[in-house]
Image 1: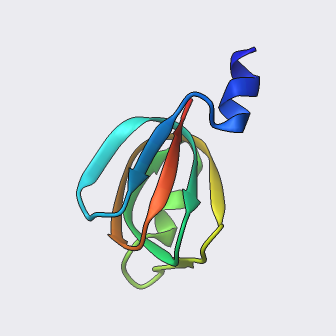
Image 2 (image 1 turned 120 degrees about the horizontal axis):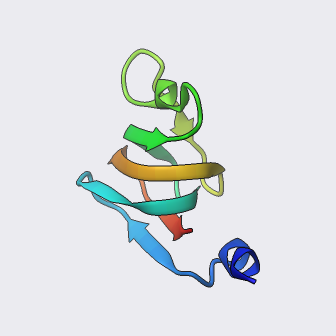
Length: 84
């Protein structure tokens, strides 16, 4: 049953719209506006390549990233990080 709740976001999460580092156990992040990630730690190989620097990527509003995410810091924009 826990996976159904997680998929619906019923396990809660956190709205992040600042540049502080945030830690937790997140299964997904959803950009609520155009967003640039400064750093991210997850179980997805090379995901940090989308972070600030030469390879910086703008996540368009409503873009989701799924995985086991343990920390995230934004350069700009806003996301919802959904709890596992």
